[in-house]
Each structure stands twice: as C-alpha cells, then as structure tokens.
Length: 67
Image (spheres, rainbow, N blue to C red):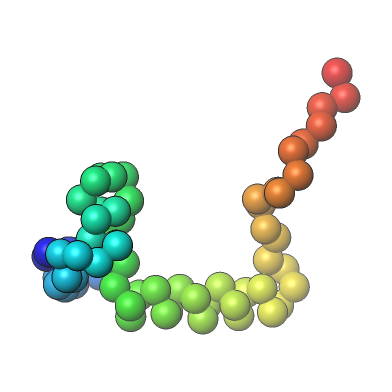
C-alpha cells in the first residue's frame, strides 16, 4: 500500500497485511506520518516537556461543573 506523510509529503510503502495499512484503509480519518517526522515530533515534544512550561490538556478524570 502506498502512503503519503501528512507533514512532509514523502511517499512510502507499507505491507498490505500490516495493522497500520488496514487501519488507514478502513478508517480514512486516520493519517500516516513517516518515521522521520514522527521521531522529530517526539524529540521536540520531549524537549518541551523537560522545560516545565508544557501543559497536558487531556485529563483522565472527568471535569465536574459547579452548577
């Protein structure tokens, strides 16, 4: 299966039987990111977390309203 990175537009190839290939084929909302871009984003995110100014917006606990 031919795939295209959403960030750098690099065209790659995935095996047809790979789980990622099946996910991309069956759910078009999912996107592919090449290993180079994925690693670059990972290192930059870890560097931002290390500064202490990075705030995670996701919460595992539901937010309670005081209505």
